[in-house]
Amino acid sequence: MASFTLTPETWKKVKIKFLRKYRELANVDISFVPGQEDQLVQQLMTLVKRDREYVEFTIEKALADPDGNRL
Image (cartoon, rainbow, N blue to C red; front, side):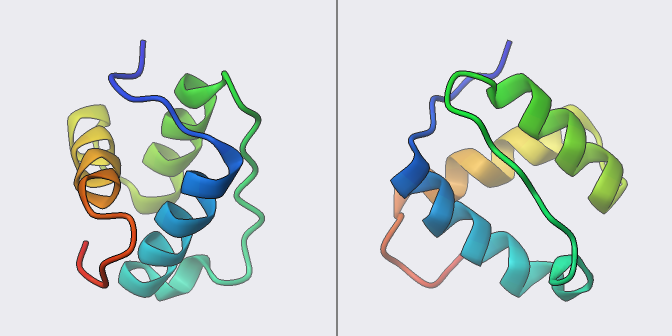
């Protein structure tokens, strides 16, 4: 179970931060459906080749300051 909750608006901001950090994902369709945070984490784990803890930490960090530039 994911340790965070996303809305479509917050996902847009988190996605922008991910795309800045992982430019190779620019052409990949990273889909998100509200309530399916676990599927999003799984998809990102595969794309960035990192473990669950790293992906969740990165998303939580982005959510801590959604309007900031830092990830």
